[in-house]
Length: 350
Image (cartoon, rainbow, N blue to C red):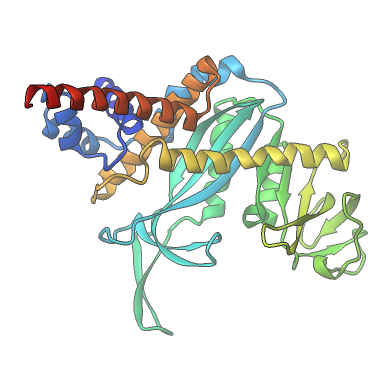
């Protein structure tokens, strides 16, 4: 890894506001580093979770606590106008309820109090092409599904001895295999959303019915059995009001048998930090602003954006300013310098 170029490129991703290009960075540095050197950096090696962990390990270990949480979720960076390949292809977007073209990234974030860092990630790849008999169209599929990658990231975190107490995820990752892996294999607590159509019973050998058909009090803790799961879970029903005034229901399942309903929900609330993370890497770390076209350069740009996020988090710890406030401060300073230069030009060419 060329650490010097990585440091310069990741600083550039924070500073610039348009497209992050090798030529743009070279011009910003007055040609001291050629655009070819930056292009080679993006196309030379394959950077991944291993290098990301090496980068964040010292700060994560410094702030580690047993009350930490691991948060896992995926996000799609839409790239509708970029050529299709095994990473930039069609994925189902749960946010839009439809298929979109882009790059799908599964991230694992560790959070201690107000500090959070990505400690692992996977770019979803779909290298296998096949013909869909119903539509007669060529489609792509993954060789490893997202839930397998979910468990792989958890295994990676445990191998790296990351300190945490709970694993948090939404209902897309609430599968039987994921819950059993967390409970039996790595022996950690989870708080995971479950879908309303999951079958539950109030006793191990009782009758199973769809969760949505059960009469449950909100904010109350129930000990239930999910169909197919070999151990009971604690279930909470949360009712909330959506932005449009409609009523929404959230079901949470946990293998933490000692906490109250309020305690479990308060811990689960920490999961929303990953939504802020997704927003920050797109808007403050230039994830969405790269014209890269090849798989390797696209993946290395993603890696660099995550490093840029970490740099912003370092600055947040020191300054007390959030990522958006830090970015605004940089933009304001740049505009002040631009304004001053414009005044000088007007005097020079008057």
